Image 1: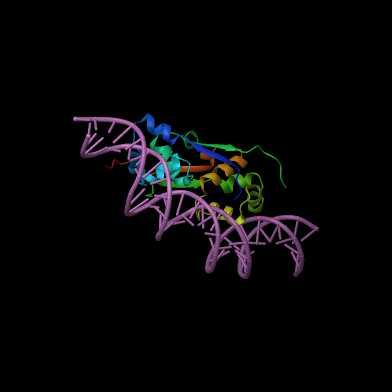
Image 2: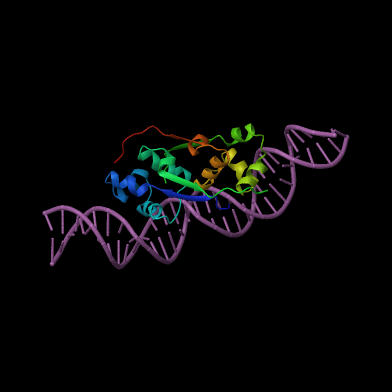
Length: 77
Length: 77
DNA sequence: ACAATATGTAAAGTTTAATTAACATTATGT
DNA sequence: ACATAATGTTAATTAAACTTTACATATTGT
């Protein structure tokens, strides 16, 4: 799949607001701490399921936590 | 990662509204037709990137296209 | 009826998210 | 200063998204 834009996220900020450690959040989501670290440090993009779960524990909408910036649009056949 | 809910989607409906074929949509997104079919038929859940791209081509928000229903919440240590 | 398009599906292979384990560095509390 | 908690990071493995190829069936148009 071609790249259509870039995805950034607010996980670090939301977590910091709540004074949660990566470990706290990881436990809440039942993933490993490394998964949280990787997402925060943009090592990889979470699955849609995990993205929804993250938004849910922060009581946010998914697009408030994960920001998609599509590249400038050009028509293509 | 544990399951926290179920994800359904409106891809078939949005595509039908626009009278697009799976092939049309696949080309627009630069994925294969089988990927579209698999998503519509709940064979798998798209990546966050692809989910955003799909919402984008339909001019919808991601949570309008992909619906997350979390399971009933129970506290856990 | 025929041709062309649309959709379902399956197998084998690639890519990437996510796990597990491990170790290093930085910050916090006493 | 010391212990403990928090974070960065890496390597090896597993799981799942996605591709490619292929074939079957269903639908639509003429």
